[in-house]
Image 1 (cartoon, rainbow, N blue to C red):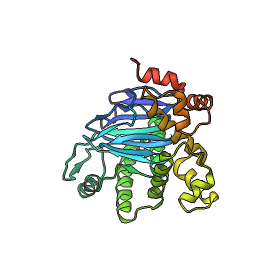
Image 2 (image 1 turned 120 degrees about the vertical axis):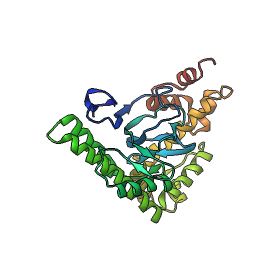
Image 3 (image 1 turned 90 degrees about the vertical axis):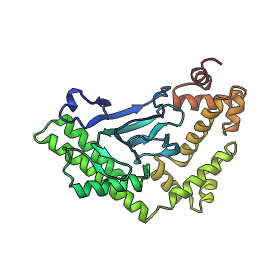
Image 4 (image 1 turned 180 degrees about the vertical axis):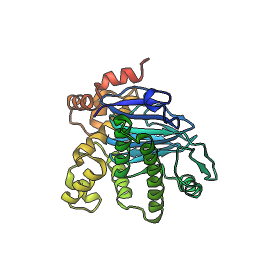
Length: 295
């Protein structure tokens, strides 16, 4: 999987002035200040390939898993929950629209083949029924991959095909938003309650059987749902929560590392340090030093 970040004006995007940015980024270590909260004019669309991402979108906290799509409207804020891009892989598009008014009136631009009526309808759905995160929209991942193939393949008709794929992406998002308004999935809500319960008592040595019982499922069905929803096994998912909470606690200088390890459920500071470095690229003390340089 080759990474790339293309920005407006670069050679690959000269024929696509409406594409402000197109990228595929794989983060294997934490890079501080790599996703600071900011608002921009383009419509920003992000697709999670793998990993778990905690973002602040329009001042609300969201957790994104593989297959999830995030839509940030022009002028809305986006940032990492801790101001950095989490470990994982994400691809994104920033598209400049001629207009997207607060009333929902949308004018994509001359590149789009959408009719005026279709553009107006999609714009209203985006603005008036906006849901920042669409879960498990793997069709969007396919469209991102096809855009990438067309852009780097340079086969005949690729400019027309890429613009068609952008239209398809807007249509897909609008249709999915409409479906979500008609029928909400129940497992995400159950899942959020489970995560809240786990975070409130991380020092407990949770088993898969105990976690499954919290949501009223057998261990096999529970493991499958967690795997499909997060991309992790239940125990690896739990480890990610432990590390996430540890990162918050490491910012409190009055709490020592050993106490943090026990509070988030690790049986020793050494086990905590080994796991923390494996997932973040830093030991807990290195992370604390880099995150709070004046400590």
